[in-house]
Length: 176
Image (cartoon, rainbow, N blue to C red; front, side, top):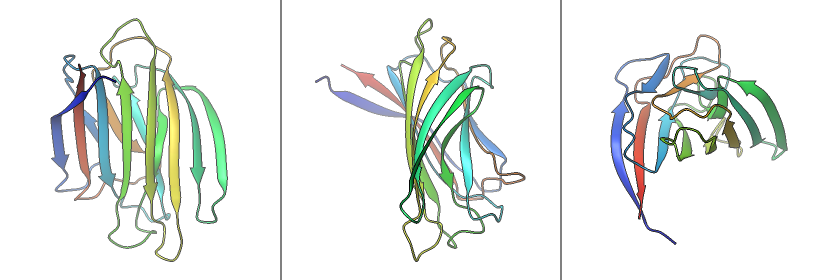
């Protein structure tokens, strides 16, 4: 099995609220990308859904996802082609105080034009301290074949912003 080397391309921790976070001008010098983020929203619904947009919504994706809730129910769904795709649940003002959700997104062959990308995600959030809460796994197929040059993370919870302290990391992976 080939060895892999992770190189931090960019990291950022918000010092004020932001509606979204975008990695731009991603270099094409790596084999794969990994995005990791910990976040919390300022809304009050008890949790939101984080979504990904690629190349400023220029790339279309389809997604299959599986999630669990606090009662351990497994649910799955498939979304048809869209320019956004769910990549995890995210804590907000209605969930346990001062807790942040986490997600990891793996994007192989991101810089290769002419091929569809298969993207995988995993993440989780604590809705309240008395129960296991939400786990989230998804598989995305990028239908368009352009190289990925920007990655935006956002919330589909109306009016919610990432709060100060939310952190975003982008790693390049080189395989040997």
